[in-house]
Image (cartoon, rainbow, N blue to C red; front, top):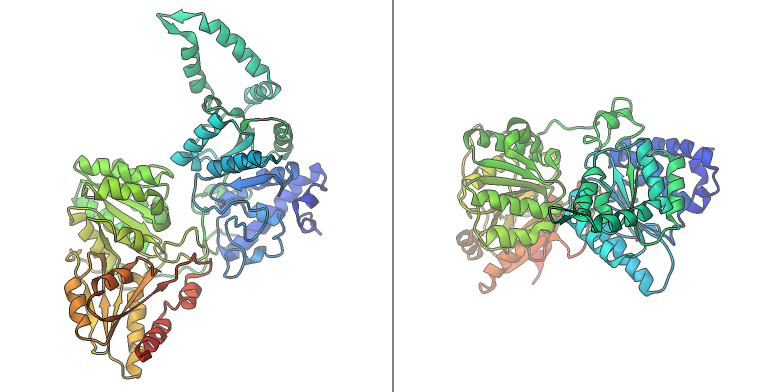
Length: 617
């Protein structure tokens, strides 16, 4: 029996001899690699945080002490050590455990996470709540260096330093944000800080420098600026945090020693640890971006398995924008730390001077694009649907209000599968179609997507295009790109009994439902709506006078979405309308096929819903 098999909770971990912890780390890595090779998931980040996770649970008293993971995609080792080892094979599977921390799943998961840069804010809130309740426990936020590119993290640091509560921030640095400074001097400096000598020396130096000036400028001011330049930790010190580090993040002896020391400290503390993404698995170490989020793969080769030959929507967008950019030097690519995931990597490779990755800072990305547009360029902002939610104010106030010609590309719209409720893009039609001046469209297939991108670039105002994750329908792409008429829907087939208005991914299931209805001698008109805003009002009103009832279908929540827009239009027409979409709730994780089937967004589901609607008196 291995060490991991003996651990059902962190209390069991504390019984393990310290010298055996490196062996436990290897067992955890093996378990994670074997599982993710079958389930898919966030591999590189979780492998990089194994020792850090072991040390946290070994030293701190969880669940009394609270650990808040930022984003949470590095928490697989945490799940294995907190009672979910026997269920780990169900990771990200329908009905199984989540790929992210989830309080409903375990008392060791203290906060729902999935979007970056939130952990410090949540930790500060918990620390304040603890003190108001006069309780006594530690609050630890684990934040990656990538998440530190988000402004929210710095807002929280600023507030935490001001409030001066007892809390710990662990900066998990995988050398992608903060410069690496590891060595004897760094260790010596940390010992000085921990022992309190550093603060004593600083006080004495400041008293001396206060009495000294150069050309009227006090030396304390100059010294503070020099400190920030020389020592990365001074940024945190100036915000009110005691800074320790950087430390080797895979050295269990050092980590446990540091955490044991920090347990006795008060006030806000930042511990800087340096880790390696993909640690322990060569393919992931070599290509951490590829293994950040990956589907099933062959452990030996590291290559994906079960990959289809069909072109993905993401690839079609990426290659289309490159084609257009070759002829239009005004096109600028902007993304928020997801160039590969959104297909802008093609653009970045060919036009490096016209591509900008702003980090995990969606709000900034949108306003930055607004500035580019005001300066005469055509920015294309490519972000996952779920993350565009973080920049809603900027879309309204800084883009749409000014009618700036910014193109928003919303990848991963609709259900995204195993990443679950924090990543489903099920709200964008609702929150975007109500924004004045903003054109909102969604393609029925990958061929129509390339034409929509072309249309968006030609339009002299803001446009949003949303499309799903994954492979297209295998439709042959037109060689020539064309512009669509804004607000014009497309009738795919005509029938006198019912009109089915579908948008985006639901057009194909609508056609399948119409075929089933035909077997029951029910003739359906099927419309590819294309646009959620503006609607093709003329066509919809004409259909309302022609058929018995209308049905709308969207891969979005029903509340406020495309169907709501149609219902608002027909509110005074006396026409029966049924809207099919996702209910007003957060949708669980599971494959896209399972979720669409469960909620009736398949050909058969639509057929049954239309039949039931027609039979109502």
